[in-house]
Length: 323
Image (cartoon, rainbow, N blue to C red; front, side):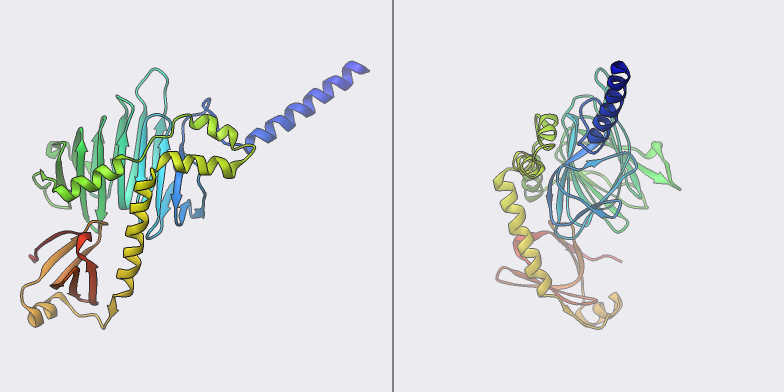
């Protein structure tokens, strides 16, 4: 009788124990997922708003709203800083003890800074127009319409354009550190040197850290998740980087207030009215076509939708518009 009671008690205890840990953060025994170690603003996984400490699994889609930011860590392999307005899908992941880790992602919009830490990691990002194959490197990937721009801080990247959805390996281009390249539906452009401002911006996001002892912090989170989230955030993003991000976030809010919406006109209408047009690109990934003028520290651009005002130190480049 007593042995039967003990047997039933053991079964019940095992079920309760299993149910308890089913709702807890995953451990090192199952490393095939990423962890969001920092969140600012609205971040969603599969259209559901999430918080720091949540895991990202195979086939999950992560999205950030405008002026938001997230840091996604994959074990000891890689750290991705996902900027506002980005969409990223985790296609495949394999974190392995004695072999190269595998990470496959699809980026459909926005900008990400990718920092591959573990030597030998087989890391690949696919966009609507190209595939970037990486081993041991740090780079930024931005998608603006049909144009992809890759800025490489360190390491090497192989860019392969897509043709009807398939990789056109004959047109692959190898990029070295300190270079940038643009990829669209046409031929892959020749890599050029990144500017000093671009280099400084990349170095800022290079400071975003891989959180050491993440498994331990997740275990601590079973007792106090709020404290674990705060600890992760502090370790992932240094105070000076966070302060700079917040400062730029406020600038964007101010710039948004300055936009004067007017009835839409065509590029041809703009050219007839203002003559030669320019392409103005900002450091946060926006692009405007129009007639521009500068007043002190403010750049004013007359676009097809109205007048946009941008703070001059947020300007990445100004080039002549070519149809």
